[in-house]
Image 1 (cartoon, rainbow, N blue to C red):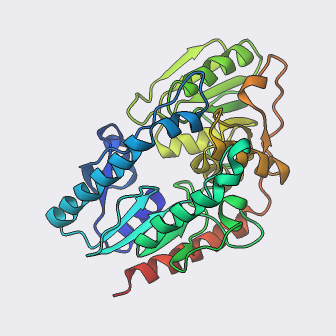
Image 2: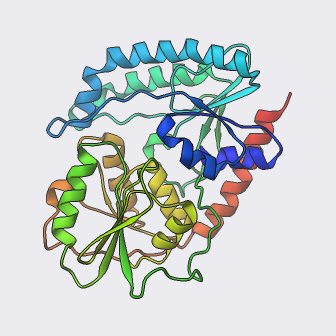
Length: 344
């Protein structure tokens, strides 16, 4: 959402950002001048033992309640702040018949686990019904054969109100190779994102695998409410959070990268022309599919969390050779979609 908000702010529009309070400090630094509104999202929660899709299945009644609740809550926000256009990231209930609303998703096709793949057609119909409630649907990907989402976007007929807006990243256009290094020697990077407990499980496993090696490894915790101070343990440096410029340097100067297969992380890496070893969250079908799809293309490599061992070898963060054209095309697609959204 940050690159969309930043582009609209640069065009002279005032931005209201609805988020959890723990993200406020981060948003203030990324989108200066935005009005921040407390608006927490649905938290499915994850288990140490059960697959993510099974936990979500159990909480579908709670998701439906939250969707209905936020639908009426956002009506008050629109009225109180005289909002003209509302853009939401994968929130089913934020459509409104009185103003223009935009739904953002990178997976019109929500992937079901193997044994339940035959039920995907039902999920597609339900998700399409949600998309049609909105004035427009933005898909952060490219429309052609070179794309990052594969069958999540390109295997079904999309509603007429759908627009591709290119790859989004707050790092887009950043050139890291000439930045002054923060480290006296080459380093690797681990990007830990996603909710607990799986994020903490992965962190502990990777510390065990990487600790004591000769090379420095920087762990980025992805906690915007945390401190940016560094903690060191042998060859490992830990940061709960870093400002965008510092984070760009750490990632851009890394020799090798390990990361979760979250789509935002993937887009950030592509825009920084970096590859990575992707480790999907266990049972999170979207991440498992993206890992397989992108490693099959040769753009990233992939390993499951249970297969992490002390024998792990970095595969090399190869530059994504087509990322220059991707960034140019993405900028044009986003500009075109925003201009269409701003008509009338």
